[in-house]
Image 1 (tube, helix red, strand yellow):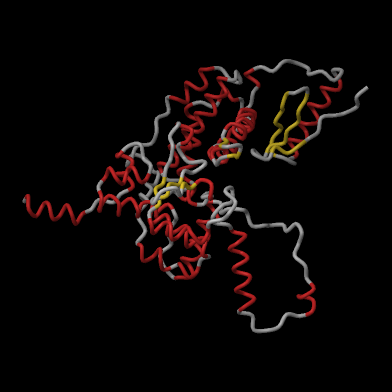
Image 2: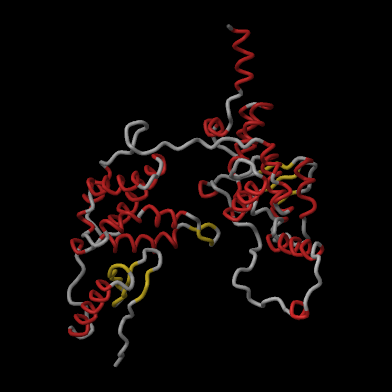
Length: 389
């Protein structure tokens, strides 16, 4: 006879305690809490007393909000992937559902309706989230319950009640408004060059020249660059709109080519901008600048075979942004983000060559999107209006 008893485990994405009995997941409440331990003991006790069989079938009225959330997060971690790698969307859902779990986690899922969603939204406003972000998070919450209906965890009317909650309109709520992303002045971008690695400097320069997204520039590889012509073409292996069937091409002119050349490698699959190489350069510089000799113990020290934090083979977007943030602090300039470099390039391209060229260079399917990226050329408008009257 199998004496195995289902274990009390931690469901990390939601912070819940979970036990799996006969393929069914039961979410017990906050991990290591007294209430979750009591619920675990109750479920296991009933299961054992019933001859290792579940006492009763699951009914939608007994499905808690926590169970819906946990089941969806399990789904999201498998669904939101590109090229076998998880995207950030699953984590976005975790953030969106935090207030739902905290306020209504133990309640039946059928009770989470319009007023409950509005209550969650008020918590987001009180936490200081901007209106646009709140609307996006509310849409994600609605999506979770739509998924629960499709998977027969809750009845359809539960989701329909949430659909009736409309988004927040500008100026008609207490939610703060977000500031649009502005271009960064090139003097601020170049002011940090001496405080960053050659790899980060090259990525900044490429973004200024081409308008690439941060997620595209950090993933550049030799094999993704077609160098058969005078102007090179970079085709990212993965990009923001690939799931819509769009192909992204970044044209690299002479100046961009000069930035890239020092980082080209023989291996076509190797990333151009490697944190490992940046770390090696930094350590070599530190050794050259050292004023005191190494002690015998320092000479005998060997590198760790498995360091706790080893440099990645390419820069994650967050690491790239953090390197810029630190450099801004050292340089004493206004803090800016790599996304602003794309706006700077868009503004320059539109001003010099027109909206259509800017749209093609940035990879937008619509000129309306490019309009949001490019700042209005007020000087040109002023010249025209001076003539027109």
